[in-house]
Image 1 (cartoon, rainbow, N blue to C red):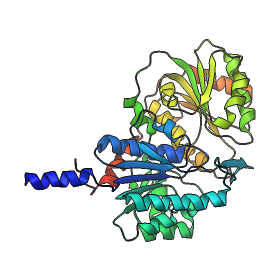
Image 2 (tube, helix red, strand yellow):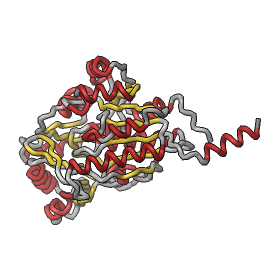
Image 3 (spheres, rainbow, N blue to C red):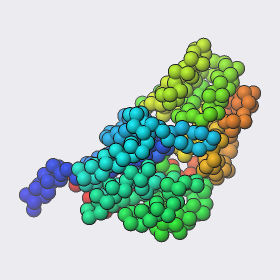
Image 4 (spheres, one colour):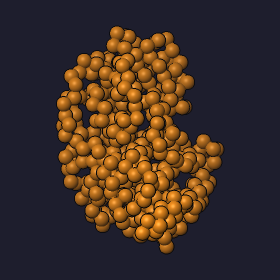
Length: 398
């Protein structure tokens, strides 16, 4: 018995087969990658003996993983801009045009499946991947016992990558499980019911997937308090004008509440640094592993209303000014409307395109003096429950 067990362990040790592959396409923001990384970190924490990889074109993945032990494979990334409220693609950072890049990524993902033969693949948001780049990968695993799982955020919005007939048929052909990263306490049963009706599968409700919740234990406690942390991970035509209003508002408040940190994307960094250069109590840096520690020691935050940012605020439990962008897809507005009854005492909601400097400064000053959070109603353990669900039935032997 002992000899057979030892042989099993030895075979497992040298197995080339991957246990969990987590895929997130690179969107205009960090939500897809951040959710997926949170679940990857939970898998590594709960099942450290398992083989787990994250795959994405998101160039900030390493920063989002931070001090975590999740390994990852980088695909060449897409570039997305917002024109009149809609996302438009173009040349990626490797300088391949989007259609060529889509073909290259399709080949890479299929090759990854052929090499690693994952037991479970967790896909965020789009069953076919960005520009259908998962179709060949799905076909590669058709005759292998790979289980495909789809993860959907709480409010999906009007997105053809999820709701199109082709996406739903792809799910029915290859997938058998949906994780819904929502909480019916805030959102009601409308959205999971719609998912069940369209896909023919009742989704597993996980609660909010929060990378911050999975990263807290990796962060050393900090004594120095900050006035605020500001997150601007991507921009629209209105963003630069609003950044100038942030500058004027913080300049008006002054340094008495402590330092401010701005986390911005690479394309905006130099321009925003130049703007804030004469405010010695402000620092501007790219999105990095320093973001969550900064958030946890801030009196308040300024964030946009995406799923990822709102999850950070819910988990950090600090007052915030939440910004809404002028986008055709009202997914963020809808999500925020559902959350507001639970968080209205702790956040101020402003619109990026219509807020003046005086209103912004008043909102910041109000939140700097806001009382601490007391609301603990919402479920923020979505990453852990998602990890436990996808691992069910998968034996990761030591």
